[in-house]
Image (cartoon, rainbow, N blue to C red; front, side, top):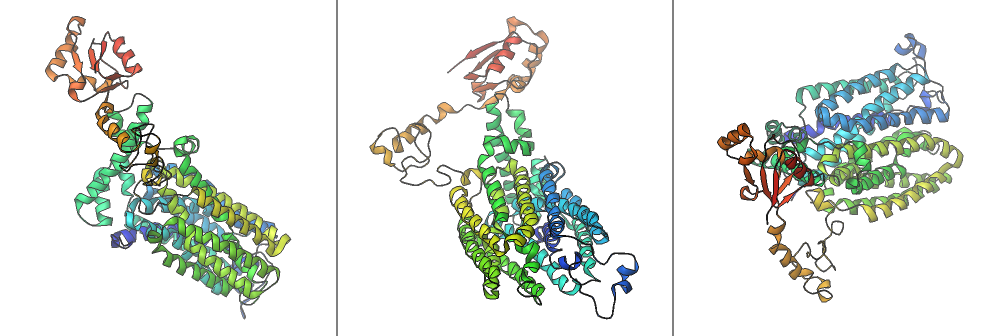
Amino acid sequence: MSSFQGLTPELVASVALICLGSLQFGYHMAELNSPELILSCRRSVPIEGTPYQDSWFGKHEFVQCIPMSPSQIGLATSIFTIGGLFGSFYVGHLADKFGRKNTSILHTIIYAIGSFINGMSNSFITLLFGRFIVGLAAGSALVITSLYINEVAPKNAKGLLGSMNQLSINCGILFTQLLSLKWSNDNQWRYLLFMASGLAVLNLVLLFVYGLESPVWLANNGRSNEAFTVLHRIRGGSYSLATDEVNSWKNTSNNRAVQDEEADEYESGSAIDSSSKRKVTVKEYLTSPEFKNSRTVATGILVLQQFDGVNSIIFYGVSILVTIFPNHAIVINCLISLVNVVITFASATVVDKLGRKPLLLTSVSMLCISTILMAFGIMTTNSLLSIVGTFTYITFFAIGLGPIPFLLVGEVTQPIAKASAQSWGTSMNWLATFLVGYTFPILIHKFGGAIYFLFSFMCVVSFWFIKQYIPETKGKDSYEQVWGAGKGRVGKHRKHPGGRGMAGGQHHHRTNLDKYHPGYFGKVGMRYFHKQNAHFWKPEINLDKLWTLVDEEKRDEYLKSASASAAPVIDTLAHGYGKVLGKGRLPEVPVIVKARFVSKLAEEKIRAVGGVVELIA
């Protein structure tokens, strides 16, 4: 199925609008790259015929530059990531409580405020504060964009639309690099910082006028009719298809909730109505064994994305290239950003065709080679090696390790935990970005180009991690399919195809174990399991619904008389229920309950009102 099938103008517009947050993230990430030397008073680029004192900023008592040491530059660059760490950590809760659209409006306002503070900065401390504020917004935007796209994209286009997040980041980087060609001088570098406020205001207006809430969030918060309407509007097609998909979201949540609540012994009927409202906190996500698979992938892939060294180029590309190309560093940096955008856009169309894992493995393999070239190029001041290594790095980063990790987190996580997973993974990504952003200028000053050998080693680690822990998610609809038996692979001739004990496997083919244990595994075992299927079928009912099985007229009589001699007999099997659980309270009326299974808590509550439990086959 084509990745473009099912893309409607409304869907593309909704994704483009939410991606403006990521575009601003890319803008702020690179805004200090080109003017870094000018801003920190290490280089002066005057405008001919216009001394700084005669410029608008000079006349209004803005300083020409802010003196900073290499470590202070590293801190000013990387404090942005500390803000992002806090923003991404808490945004999951806000997104679940207030919705994706409202949270986007909030972080867009924060973008505008932080950008204005940056532009007004006359001191190192003020610049740090402004960078931290925009970092808060960027952390939120990164989580919300990935979450929203994952929730509105049709299955066949998840890879294509998911790549739009990284494409938007790259467009933001390219935009600021292009502006820096004009404004990287003593008089105009502040325009780069103020421009971000204009972007934020534009984004805010568009969100208020055209923004649509995520249909998944609407459905999970009891607003099914709105979810139907929004999904039909952005996907097109028939209204019945939208209805079916919304119902499938609710059913998936309900089924998982029932399983969780059976383990607690007293959750069911009434819980099904509210199960879709269950929210997984970040603390629960980090501590529950249920989320181990997702947690491993989210943490590993998003940390390694940064430890492979991409932000050494994004943050400090100009300061590195200026030692090799003193007159053309900014232009080359713009070309690097342009290549990043073009390759990311081109690769977006093949993510759903080639799969996530092959692209990731190819990407990190070539990153390893390119970082080695960059190391030798910088150490020997060989311009050819440096250029080839840098462009190769950006090309293959844009193919795999750039766009796929954030897309992958949503695909390997249970629906109820996606917001927390994105928050946690993005927080780890920000922390790794801070470590790279802060330490890189110090380390390259000390070790020179040899620092890129460290990034080469991290690429090798990334290859091992992807090979070992990352499942292929292409074409898989649910968490269960991604993490199915055998880590997503059910082979026809495996020794045991995923069944439990002697219950056979997950397909009808004979297995190799037939020759060792005939009659227990394979066809015979599965035949036994299916014959006994009804034996294990035990629909449950809670105590708070038990009296609904009694005829309404007789129910009123029993409740009025409350006599042990005339206790009603409630046969749950006759009504299709085999299991009685203990949620809720019973009226103070004796009752005789017949069931196949009664939980300990339910039995205690029945006996407490003078009732009797009778187990039947």
